[in-house]
Image (cartoon, rainbow, N blue to C red; front, side, top):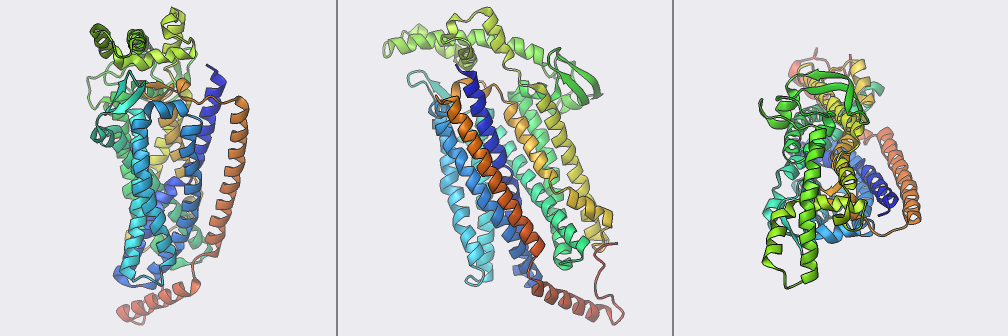
Length: 536
């Protein structure tokens, strides 16, 4: 097996996935924020909320188009670059993707046109419903994609058919309500809501610093801080749930995130800081928080979290057990319809570890001929590179708690300090705009890199999943995608910055500002202040 083809295929898919996920979180969050703003407009009939809906909706539309363009490429990659994967598990993996296209993508793609071109053609309530359907479609799209991805992390509701050499679905209910997929969905969409909230907060803060579109900015900060606070709390809570699920079904990923080489007495400590040394199986300069990791990973005080070294030993035992299943499978395939009952029984007894025997395909054509050294090497392959997981998780978690603090502060100032924001806080909000994307990308690196060496955890190794392509094919397509996606990213950034600098329609805001001032005077008397100060 040509490992360079495997690594180049991984590089191409990782690059396209990370590019695509630059656009997904903002689409998920802005779609909901825009729907909330239009709902307020319908309830209050105040022009400023219509203005806000159209302005933030325009930025949503730019981002939505780029998300679709980059996402479609990934659908084709499953067949072109990962053909054996598609053949082996397509019966399960393909179902959620098909439903995503039919139920979710068509819904959002249809109604996004009505949203942009229906302002003067639809009644207000109907247009508001359209906005909510766009938001629902965007989030449903994420649901089905994450159900498919969650199955790769924790394969349930499926069994291996030795005659067809494919995984086949046995329970759609189990696939759909896979606890890993459900936690991943809420965690991911909540991260998208935080991304949109920080984006709205930062852009609005920039307007206040410039003294432009003050009323739109103040109201946008009020919406973004409230929505973002709820979303940031949800991200942290569901991150804890994801850690617990990893402790149940992906023990190697959890141990690698912690750089936990040896099994520690329960409850295990959390390593707040350290420098993983994978060559020597130790973490240098480690700073520990007692008990925390044990509580996160096991929800108990007496259950140990296995370390990497013990998990490697366990993997070696599972490889040897899987070889028994592989030998029975070859007999199965040779005898076709006349399979002895004892062979069937042997295969069924050991089939759970068949995927571990496939790890040896990296070294030998027939796993049954593998040497002890090759079995040991395959067991060591179950350990992903530790330092990206260790630091990726800590960057993501640190930023997550930072978002909570930021949203609490702006929510407090918006709700109890008459929307007066110190200049330093506004500058911080602008500077923070890129950070949710950093956190989101780190999260995907932890989730996907931590699953290696598997495409489907414990079932199908990555090294077996690729298509028969040449290195030249892959290098050319990697260069092509990198060039095209970079151009698209520059175009999107240019359009976003253009419309942010341009801002909303000024006349609507001026009218609304005058109405607000007039109402304040009528209620507060001649000495009432006409406008609240945007910053202090």
